[in-house]
Amino acid sequence: MKIPRNLASKDLVKALSKLGYDVTRQTGSHIRLTTDKNGKHSLTIPAHNPLRIGTLTSILKDIANHHNLNVNQLIEFLFS
Image 1 (cartoon, helix red, strand yellow):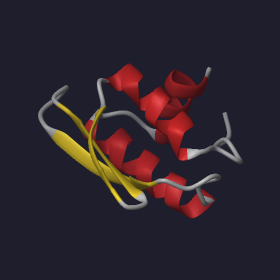
Image 2 (spheres, one colour; image 1 turned 90 degrees about the horizontal axis):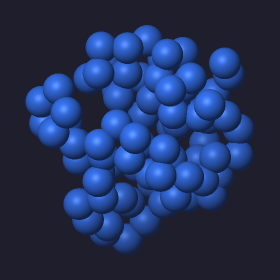
Image 3 (cartoon, one colour; image 1 turned 90 degrees about the vertical axis):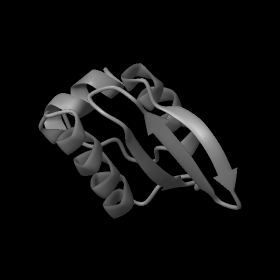
């Protein structure tokens, strides 16, 4: 499955809740998410609509590494 195009940050936050990520704070145009699954993991995503493909790819790689998945498995889980 391909990385979704025109994905808004609010849609990504909603999809990441499947993995246990919760919004811990928002400062300006950046949203901080944290999960305790597989150890504590935090990440920051820009509150943009749509997210740039390079930014989204980097975020998904970081999440996939934390959860011991490859990016394609993560995309299938989050967006199908």
